[in-house]
Length: 172
Figure 1 (cartoon, one colour):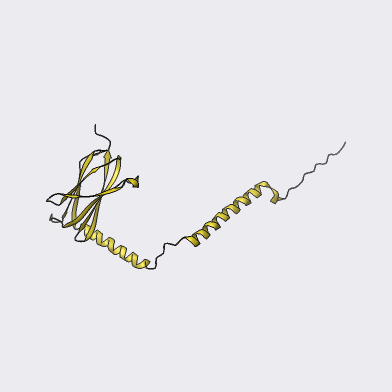
Figure 2 (tube, helix red, strand yellow):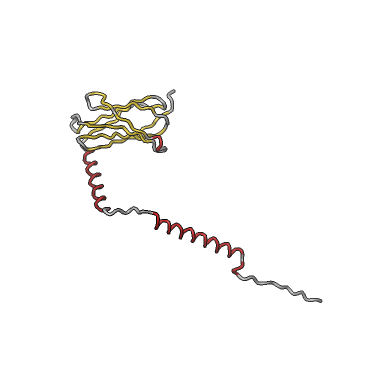
């Protein structure tokens, strides 16, 4: 009987294709991260401003001033059912808490499409009658939800009032 010799060569662990693959993947990830860190340090100007605290204080004061000013007025949007590609009249009325007329210097209607910012637009509103009601004629070219915002300047202070509306398909 002849005895067979089985020769099994033991490969070194670092010559395995799996180990080489994992090491290359690790080196690639680390290289990309180092590149991104260097890019962010050398090219990004940063978000920090010198007077960040003062700016934050001013922002908070302005927000509280606007919110307090908004409480002085009674507002209401009026419109009938709005259909796609048909002119619709949107009315906005504003009075003080006692029902007195507000001294409006300027009023503008902003229309926002939450799902497509490219469709946003604005238009000035004109006085509809003597009861501090303003109106704008609008034609919507997309059905669905829209946000409307009336931006009113009263005695040099801007106040904003918004509401969501739904533009329906053509009427039956």
